[in-house]
Image 1 (spheres, helix red, strand yellow):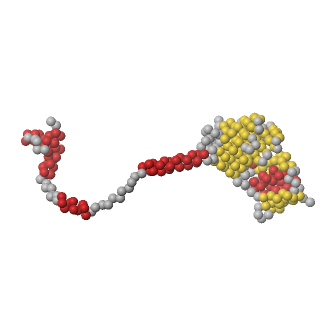
Image 2: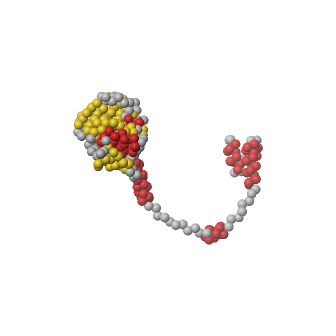
Image 3: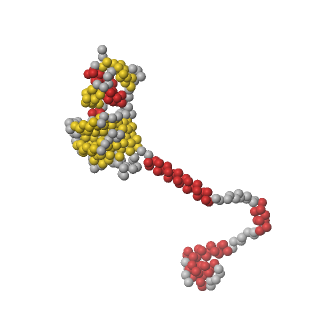
Length: 300
């Protein structure tokens, strides 16, 4: 018989003197025996059942009974879960919109680390959460793309689409004018049912239903990135529209012929110099109003 069993029998007064002596040889069990002997001499207070019952009656606690409706509770929880899940889906489906306000440029990095720079008055839209399955961006205006090496995606515009793979290119899509210039790599341009592939130094121009191509692009990047707009045989209306975007102004050109053609450039840093660059070659005078308005007149 082990010491635990002996201790149990001791507490029940079932041990002989010899067994008690054996148990006391262990210091730990000896202290337990001392505690047991001391506690056996303690007297418990008398308990009056009648008095206790009367005290309980005097301190009756009123409990409000609430009828549980588990199905209603479950329905409420399910409705909350449905709302949270719907909000999660709604947020995930939201598009990312990047704007470049008039007089500004806007830089952005796509999820694949491709870099985009938007020209003034331009907008880019894509879905960040769906990027791995649907690599598409929607462009309105003008933007310069620097695609990460090995990455591919498609640029959608109202006039045509551009499919790229690790390249650098510029897209201009305003009104009925659509231009794509390739500065590095290879770009596939889809116009109606026709697909045109261009490489470094080449460009595609689609204007009023007419398609032209060029292989004489010698720049390393579009000039507007360096805050300068350049034109080659463009209508004055197109040039003035760009001037409005870059300086966030309004131009009254009712007094001039905006169908005439212009070749040249203007800076984005000084409105007076920009106006001279456009007006002097065409013999046009201008007046700058206090409310950010410019009025053009034919020179006498």
